[in-house]
Length: 316
Image 1: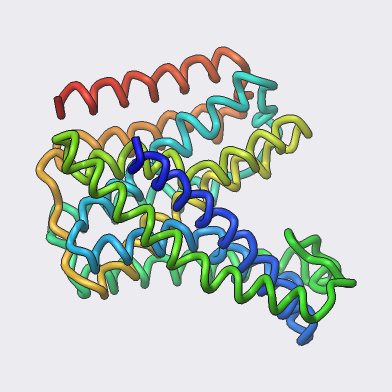
Image 2: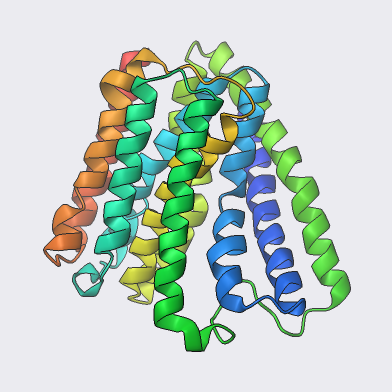
């Protein structure tokens, strides 16, 4: 029981530290005169992926790369089936009014690239470089699109965590808290997740696919639930799509420079295809302008429960 409590503690530290880092970096950048739009596209986007990134790097360094891969693949599956499913179940999401076709295609493309890299694995720095090139191309394209549509709003963009009246000492405190808390939380979570895997006879990959993946998807879930209650479907869908792209290309791309990531055989025959299938489920929502109503919520969350049961059934 102690390792579960410590894993939870590590996760809480990670989430709080990630939020602190984003707030500190956003307000420091705006104070230095960096346009809010640029901050939104870079610091906020990368900062919200910091917990997953630190977990993956720590796992690779500690010799449990399966935890890193499981965290990313499990998070992407949870992001679609759980993070979209629960808000749809609670309040429904009017996704029929959204326009996320281009970013959705980029997410599916990123998923296909990641699967191809896995089949060419183990993932080395060469494969990691390919993944980072992919995320650089996507970010560059999104950056150009955003500038084309919001050039006049560059300074007035609403940035998460921005506070024009924040004192300098608070900015410093947020930065220090984030920079200290992220590696501390990652260390506590990875070490105790590894203990759980060894004690209960399950692989670190499965722990990553379940416990760690759901935990690191909690910020996305909170954001999406709030967006659903406010009927901001584009925010909810965009949050999931963007997170999935970063998870596959950026996090594994960076982690690949810290060590080799062997691909578990089960990934190649099951987990990768579940992740791809979950992504393709959204085709009617994105291209046929379907709303994510409560029936969709039941369907998506039900699929996720079945996936977890299947995962544990194969392991035990």
